[in-house]
Length: 315
Length: 315
Image (cartoon, rainbow over all chains, first blue to last red; front, side):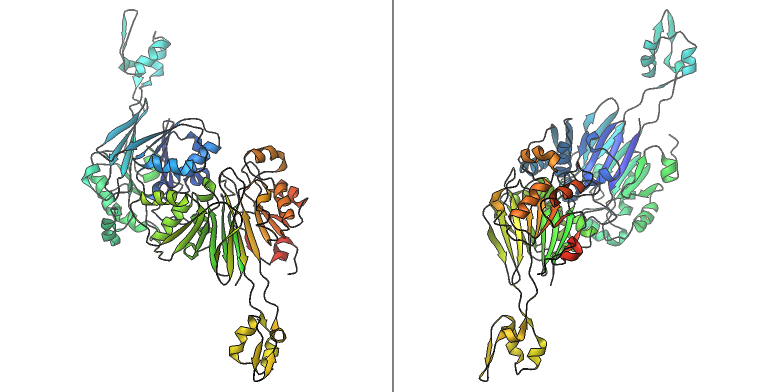
């Protein structure tokens, strides 16, 4: 059970030979989630060895083409490859009608069920949860209605202290209770769960903010997230352009991460006008100490901070 | 002035690591034409060094996703890169509404004019012509309304016989007439154009048939075309599947090319179930002597048959 992020597209609206437009793949405790789906996302999934039929949830931020034009093709390929497993798609109201029209023009209904959930950008709202994860949606500040997403792992079960358990008279049926933090009474003996368990594995959280200008409205929603992906379309040199187009500079992204006390910051959605993200990174690092620039094909295992950022949070 | 074809996608509905879905780029006497536009076409254009802003005409065959899902993204990128030159798009009725909806969701109109021309598959119909080329549309036989296209070069001007002209008393102003095949009367002397000109450069024609089952309805439209691109989704092994899905086998494509007396045949739209097109090629070659399998990135200069097919038509 791990929490992994794959960057499928780290660029802004115009794809280049190095950067495709926005798409990310998240595997959080075997919940497989695609965030945004630019043109070419199905090809990127294949390129990086990710199985598109595993995807259970698609989260679309907004209806600019570089965030959803790959969706009809992805769904079509899922169908052609024989999918029959349900898919849930969260996105702005209006997405369902657009995708439905594109697919129905082909005259062939999909063989699998899609549960489209239309969202209105708003305060943070729990849109999905199960035993292992929860997903929140929240409003960003862009030119058109835009939604950010946060994925939290739920607290994990305690680990058993095998040595203590084996030298006790506890039965197998008692173990799930202990792992859930429930003490056991058996044969007039009290077994305090604390004596038979160890700390659970740490849990992590990830938030996705693209596209947006920096704003207070979403600070609470991303508060204390372990890893924040924040768009950084521009450098300070093009601050005016960022303001005009409701985008962020890398420095502004870092300020948002600092204000919201996010531990690690991943920058992306870089404009095609930049050869690389060196200046973005430099400007952001002046504000926040744990920053990385994303690139297509990047793979991050949450918690493995030492390897990725060169620093650990000692969770 | 040349007639060049670039294959951007030689595969069928499911893109693979080797074959993208349908798209072709034609430069016919500096008329720049895109035929079909699968998802990822803008990336393919970039990959093969073709300038998307040069495109003046887009011809869409039908509304299955693997033939048009790349159109919204391509148009969007043309806009973002500052296009203001008009673009003409031919395609099935209904295409304009779909693309319009996808683009207008982003809340930003395009900065350039698009002339959408909705077509009904029919007998061969001249849809465009100018001094150098003519484009015909014609109906194919697929599960949904589908259009084939044929691009003809118009007869070229005669070449001047420089030696004969220089040793005559002809004036510069006479030369355009001679090149157009008009004899000249000057100072009581008759200059027969035949004595002062050589044969013009040969002209070529290209037809695109994808997707379709073999049918008589389009044989006349592709008659005696120099190069025919014909879909060959399946091999004979999957003949039944071809019939059921209104597609062609390679052998059927070759029969069509033979019946219509097409000089050269290019196969494509290969199903992703095949590792390569060796069997397609073998089966087609039993019927037609000048056959080639297309591949992504393939570049063909019409007339350069010797280099491509190993045989010349001695035009």
